[in-house]
Amino acid sequence: MPHLLFRGVPAEELQSVASQLAEELAALCGCGTDNFTMNCLHTTNVFGGGSDAPAFAFVEIGWFERGQQVRDSFALAVTRSMQKLGINEIEVVFQTYREDSYYINGEPCL
Image (cartoon, rainbow, N blue to C red; front, side, top):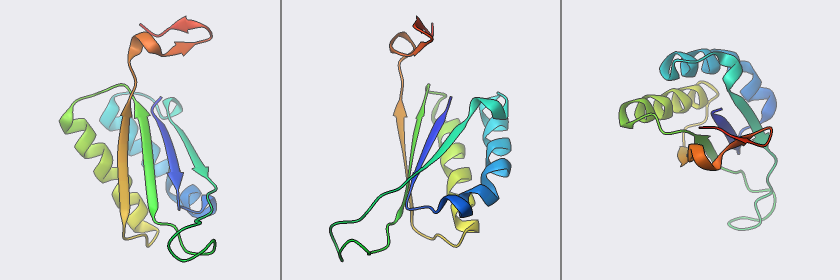
């Protein structure tokens, strides 16, 4: 936790910046790098140019809220990492989990 889901970002490219990004995000969140998951989702565009149209980078972050300042810094770190890959249009969205609705091994994370 946090969970980062990447769309429109090739996995092999993300892999080249993932370790550095995890270290930067861990420092922002005050946790270890082992708290993060990063997944690349395969998507096929079916609108706006056909199924072979390039996808724009969309990063969805699921996490427990850490405040506006951390959220802004987190989004900027993700954006900069994507820019290092030559991706210039990046959208980042946060999905905030409630601790009373998040379970680990059947136990609420309170």
